[in-house]
Length: 577
Image (cartoon, rainbow, N blue to C red; front, top):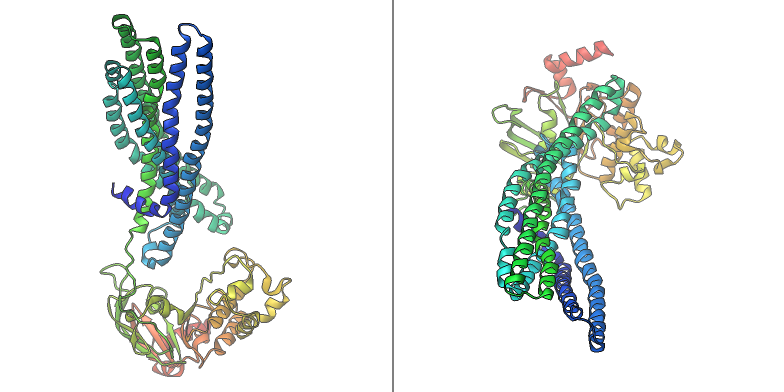
């Protein structure tokens, strides 16, 4: 009921469409209830022979019947289409809402989630809401009204026979409850397996180069097949329960019909029940059991819809650990001073990643972070952008605690260039201007020139309109890095984070990227993570980090003079050049 209540609140914005659909449903039910009455009246007229007056009466009844059947078309359209329209708009809204929630959740939420499974929840599980709101709700209303209306009519025809007709109903209701408890867990498993299948497909398609390089096509096909038939088996288990339930309901309903025929024959013999009443009773009998047998489909659809709804609502109800304070301020006129004040952090409780890190980077300076892989360098930059919150200590920009400012204004003042550069499947111009869509073409070209990528772009057949391909697959690693730098430059953020911007490029491309970085020196505050020390020799401050702690700090020359870890790293790199 809690799930249904949440869904109902989402559907309220389309109440007008639902009211019209329900009105059409009720009207359709009234038409369906009236038609057998007309047919019964015609039976009563013709049973003892037909006179001229009877022909006129039959003609009137025929006209009424035609009008009823025409009205049935109109009301069925209202009932069916309008409910579908409202339901699909609701599905569209929910998909957007679920995606928006995912887009604003903290990065930690995604650590144990598969992209394909989340996609399945956004696309597949929300689609099941259409079953709930386009079919179940209208059909439930129709069934309740039909059942009530037919029961009243049957009681007016013959109360004894009507009560006999109701005998199978308790059995059907009990079987429905049992079915609901049995089948929903199978639908839950089925949807989870579908999410796992989508996750595996997404993973494999993203890593198709590695799969083919290592000759693992058959192995991965087997893994996909395993996930695929895991979903198939779970779905078949649910359908097996349904395959038992549906015919059981039909059998119980059929017993009701047998009872009516037998008892109706007895009443015709003992109490003189009229032929037209028996005909009317039999005509209404199909309408009476139709909503009851329809219960089987409704219960099955409801379990499937609720299983999907539960998976969607787990996302909508997921807590966001990083949110604006109620009194958060806008971060404006940023000069670019960065201060870490005794900051400690761990992703998993009890396993520290950063331990009492403190430093200050003045506006326009370059701060370099060096050290082995996994010592917390990237974590420092992610804490700066507030993708995570420190366990203790403070992070300040221009002397303002970043927890006191809005997340949007904070991130607007920081541009990041990652080692694994992500480009969208669009033109080069669109990718450069992603953070500033209103930028002019001249501003885009100016940023490309500053990033030393303009000549290569202009040499391409389509120039700035060249499509990069998914994740920039049509470009080299160095080109992608410099386009990402151009994107950061165009944003005009006072702080730029360079996370291993030269780690995966050759010496010539490294020099081009270094030149691009040098154009920013003194104009922006730069936080650079680097394994290649050649790219950060000009940094005003270099921090050497080991096991989450700053063990050395100073300029390139000062650290060489100390003869510590930095000097050792520098000697090793010289030997490998």
